[in-house]
Image: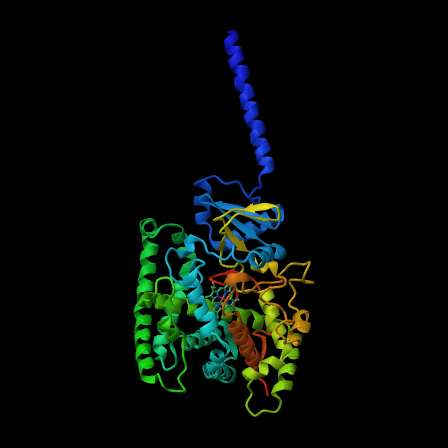
Length: 507
Ligand code: HEM
């Protein structure tokens, strides 16, 4: 009996000691950022059912409760969400390399810049886009294509304004225009318009299905095929259709290259640069499948982001007549009495208010509300919390642009707030959209994986908005009605009620 008592007392003492050690350890070690309770399998299955759009309000609530850095667990991996601009700067700029990789689940099913891991292959294909394809002289070589697409857009809208009921659902026109422009940058001119329509349709279907396909990416290919058989079949069918059409174009382009090699007028397009590219690690050229995937990324990454932003900017110009008027006056002053009502590319740098309007559009309505997820390559401490090696990190782009400590009346569309920066076109003093010195907003992301095409995107936004406003007066479709700015998550954050505007020709 006595021995039993001693045994129980010793066991209790050992237990107490263990608890004290555990307690001491946990008070010393650095914790993951706070977040909801994780129940393996149950939480995972719950999260798999939730669409991305439903996740956002949940994350916002958790930020309100726990602060600017929180953790979700999914398949036992911590997913960290950051909504604070200073922490974003600390991570993406001050610790750029640690935050430069992408999670494996993105890499599962595709070869492209956005999902490549941080390394020589990513560097080669990104550099090809950012420094070879989008270098300043090549930017210029596409001026003719931009003008062609703009002319086609303006004449379609003129037709609507003259002969139809002059009410237009703008997004359909601009999405088509931007797609055609990127298409000619990618494959060159002279492609049959019916083929372009077909590819546009497939790219769109692939984009819209990408939300539903999110779950596929979390599993290895073989598991996805069994678990999500129907979705997988639809997806592979679309990919095959896309592949057949794009391969045909790539092969046609190879013949054009052979013929025109010495022609001074020859405009190098994205496919040409890809066909020339060598992967440094594997010491080989890209195969056809890889060229297809990179062309598809070029079309997808550029079309919806740019056209969605254009729609949001125009919606705000319809809503606020005063801003539209100020913009027209600025443009008229520069364009003057020219016969042709056109803002040329070289005019853009004389239009600071235009630049301010575009920046405000990107701040208030960034087309993507998160960056593409990063994975950290070593343990790092942010705000006193551990961001562990291999943890996934997401940045809340839209919330960062609405920070009331930086932006007065953050939800109001007020281009004037950028005017001082926009007037100063000097690279170093103008608004720092890359967030190098400090992040105030980050519509193009930040750090090593910042959007490589942000200058091209700014040019397209400025050029199209300026010309749309110079040529037409934009009003609400019904007198006295208002523009509804409710958001809806698709591939980008689009207008739930697409902008329908009444347009009339300006004299
Ligand atoms: C208004 C227009 C655009 C916006 C707002 C935008 C925004 C973004 C954002 C937020 C990212 C993620 C950056 C990060 O993870 O930090 C990104 C990445 C990327 N964007 Fe854009 N983008 C736009 C236009 C374009 C265009 C026109 C192209 C190509 C023609 C393009 C190609 C890419 C690529 C390839 C990446 C992946 C970069 C990498 O992982 O290294 N984007 N973009």
